[in-house]
Image (cartoon, rainbow, N blue to C red; front, side):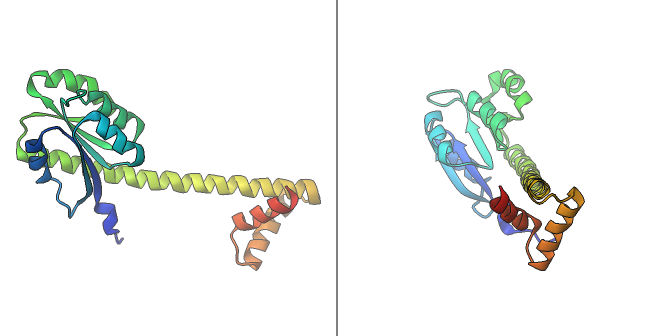
Amino acid sequence: MILDLREHLFSVLVVSASEKFNSSIAEFIPKSRFTPVTYADNIAAAKRVLIDNSFDIVIVNSPLPDENGIDLAIDLCADTNTGVLLFSRSDIYEIIVDKVMPYGVLTLSKPASSKLVLQSVNILCSVRQKMKRIEKKTVSIEEKMKEIRIVNRAKWLLIDELKMSEEDAHKYIEKQAMDNCETKRAVSERIIRNYG
């Protein structure tokens, strides 16, 4: 199986007011694996960026000037398939973990070792890869279900309008698709336009 290089690139949003943190986190998100990398220095700026963009990974350095970042982390995990890494002060780490863990937010206590940060980023990448495969399967299943509904609607139109049996309507759609080198969906859409 050949994998597309783009499947191994991850978009990242770093939400942090600390230039020192941003510089150190940049070591763990090289452009060869992470692109684009966007920075926001407060929650309001992050929310503006998130209106028009989705990210594979969001890294939140809590607290931030306008909020602590916990609600953003929870919302992203609850409403999207984004992987979230939340950095918390060590004195409140246990409280934060108890609050965010049920939503799937990965949390590290500050200061965190380089090895632990790298492992956490790699875990988020692995989980995000799995989510991308699930998303593709979901889209494929949804498309197949839509096709089935269209074909069934066309069959019922043939039954109602041309008094065919269900089996004959099914065979008619299949034969038209083979004879015209079309998909059953294309044939069904034409039947729906003609008789619907």
